[in-house]
Image (cartoon, rainbow, N blue to C red; front, side):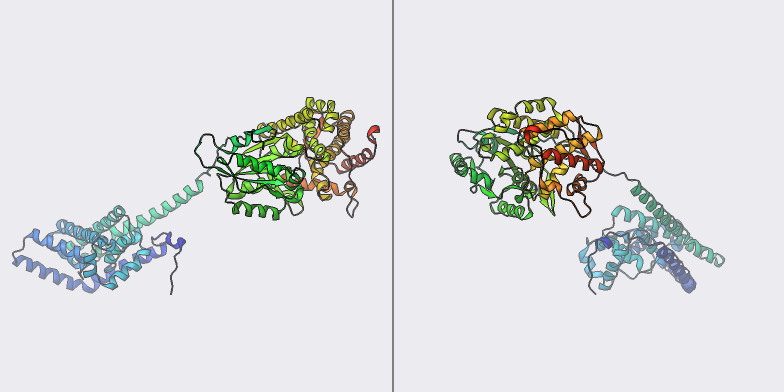
Length: 637
């Protein structure tokens, strides 16, 4: 039968179970009593003859004692009747000297047996130990414990086998000596009593029973101690407090505002990618992923990138030309993520390399997710190329892809190593994309900064035309407010439910999904903000005047307040957009939490939505969305 290693069996206690313990006691008592009942007369005659032999010989008492010690010590190698030798020692040398001889001889025999079993005396072991004895000791070692070691000291043959097994097992030496010496002391005392009392037959039974009293008491105490220790250990395990791991990580990354970062005179990229502290370091390996629409709209961009890396070839190595990725939400899919992993592996990207991601929020989300999970995190710099990415998505710590019909279902929180906002990269954006990105600036101003909201109102004409200075400040201030919330809000990884930066987002995410992402994220957020503002008015939290200021600003910047997908309903006539509430609750991971304006620059979270009031707000939104720009008015229901 084959045997297999089992960690569970290997670590089990080797001491006897309670049933085995009491069976061993009974066997031990039976052996002692039976041996004396069977051989009482022979023992008496043998001791008498041995006494006459020593009286007639020239042996000294010391020589005889040493001889008996040697015989008992060699019991592990020779077929010595140790019980008879012990009784003879007591009868011929007296109870005190005889017991000392027995104790010394048995203890030396234990030491010799342990050394043989442990392999210290290999030549002697090969010469004197039979294969049967070795096999028996080898079999016993897996079942040998402290209690068994004590019990077997009084059992013929097994006494010698147990010490061999202890050596093979590597039993702790100090514990081995303590247990065997105590057991040998008990046996020596028992033989002393027996040897002394053999002269009187009337005391025979008392002597036989007393021979087991001391070992029996010791074994009984050992068993109770083992049970008590086991109970205490169990209680100790149950009472052990839980460990708490707690540490803090200080993390920072620069958000750099620059222009023409791929011009050879601009050292922004070089200073970021190549360590100044190690001027002799090898060139940094760099891989670039770029939004395909960006490369198409700016055909000179790939050439400028290659020229920059050629100019700084000693410090930077571009592993390949900019790798184009599908534009928009279509890139936030599992097949694209798998492709990114394959490219990172193919080009040998490691934790000393850099990845640059050029594109809008969707590109940054997908490349960021790949980089944060490849090799458990590689260095990545975001280079946002849309207004929305430069003032919001690019400066945050979130990465992810869409899956199973849900936006950003798979992802992680992992800050980038750097963000570079290059305003010149926005020049090739379509007007629609420029305007869509401003929705996030209006959002953060509405919930957080009244002064910034007023500035947006005052400069709405310049912003709609995407004038340089006004647009640059709007992007800068929006990014600054987002970073303040992320870094100083106390919840950068969104563990809690309060998320003011998600204002207008529950319906925005659903609208994007319903339109199959025809509606841009910024356009959907603009509608979502108006819908929540109208609901806040229904609750009596927000005044009509402030709600209309928000609506007017969005219309002045060119946002549409209505999309046909908002009119879609399910079989029961319930607007499909309202299913975004449950989607958003699941996205939050539990309790629904939606920020609502109480005034411009202030908000309050709500955890329940009154659907009849939200449906009224949706009807009001439909009315407002159909009004011309110049005649926008409040529509009471």
